[in-house]
Image 1 (tube, rainbow, N blue to C red):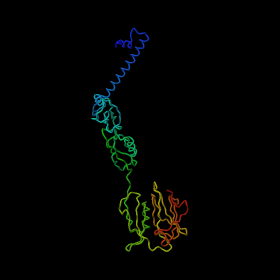
Image 2 (cartoon, helix red, strand yellow; image 1 turned 60 degrees about the vertical axis):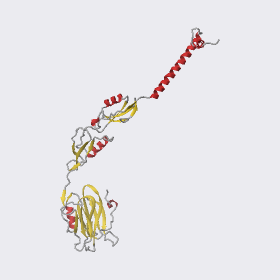
Image 3 (cartoon, rainbow, N blue to C red; image 1 turned 135 degrees about the vertical axis):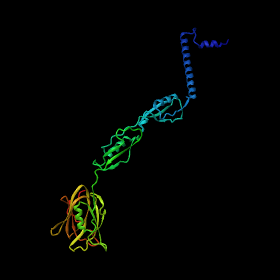
Image 4 (cartoon, rainbow, N blue to C red; image 1 turned 180 degrees about the vertical axis):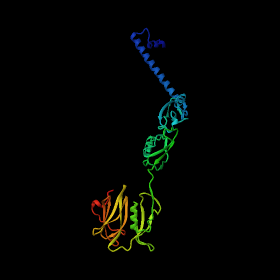
Length: 366
């Protein structure tokens, strides 16, 4: 007779009629099979849930909103806030959202993180004290403060005025120090350009013999340069025929005057006419320059002597041929040359070839 299903189940299912060891074995087998079955059910459930997916939601607009309100708005949509704090140019935005990612209106799954950039206010929220400081120092400080680009103070073009303060010193500002900043603020500075420069009115040197003009310029400590040209048909030789700046012009003390003279004619056979032209240092203070001519017989004559700012020297002379021309600075010889008649078509038209005295006196130190 065939076994019934129940008979077959009795051989598999644990029974009180089984041997204790057999019954324990069957129990363990059934427990293992049940655990595997439950794991399969759980895996299928997770898989099916993932296929269904989380619900989608739209990212709200939270820019220009206080941080707490922005986080609540995201929470209502099932979104999580990721906060980053930065300085901003507008102090009024402190504590408010100034940027978000993803942008408003984007569809995302619930539970996604939304990055919020929150302003911690301006790096500088009050106007500083700039009076008494160097304009260069103020500019450097503001460049360093706003290197990140969050600028709240913008310097206007400074106004420069004469004053007793050192050149470049800030002597006034607007707005005043301590003024609160609510947006990008333009700051105006008044800067010293130093004491007012003394000016003189130039006399006229036109029509004077060049020796007289050199003497008057030296007496008044007016630095000069000479240009020499041949006299035209209606001009006399050896006279000043033009000057720049023009007579009666007001110029700063220490400004150069350019005089144009006609070449002396005739020049005695035993004499030489020319100009000494030298580049000099720009002296911090005026120094005494003296040009002296020493004849072959040893006679000394002062061509000119004056307080001079340096930069350049251009002075005419007419001395005995082969005389030594010696330039002194504060009594120390700095240049020497010999006055020789130029060889036709081979020498400088306005003066002799230079012949230095020695290495120490050839060129003035810069």
